[in-house]
Length: 104
Image (cartoon, rainbow, N blue to C red; front, side, top):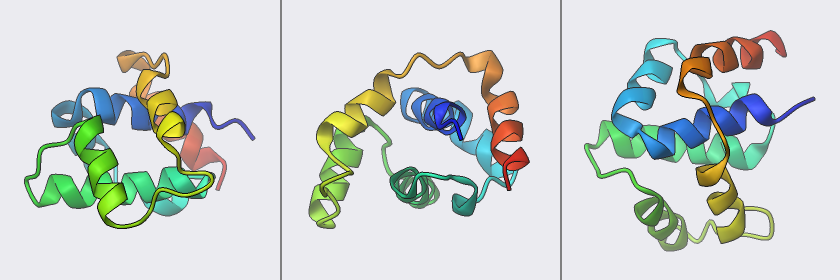
């Protein structure tokens, strides 16, 4: 299975949280729809921070993960940087959500 759609979704949320997190919420995207467990973890934290009105930025996410002791062997700083810089196309966001749902 390709992780591209979920990487694109998370990348867009990190790059433009005010637009893409509400869209994911509106489409009722659930953490269980992510194949990669670290992607699901990041999504849960992004939702939590968004609902609490916190600033969502890569630096803030990294600090939150460090504070929670969640940086691990797989969920690393390079892993997060790769998500942030993933070449996602904003116009494909909804299509990526549909592809993620189609794998359930």
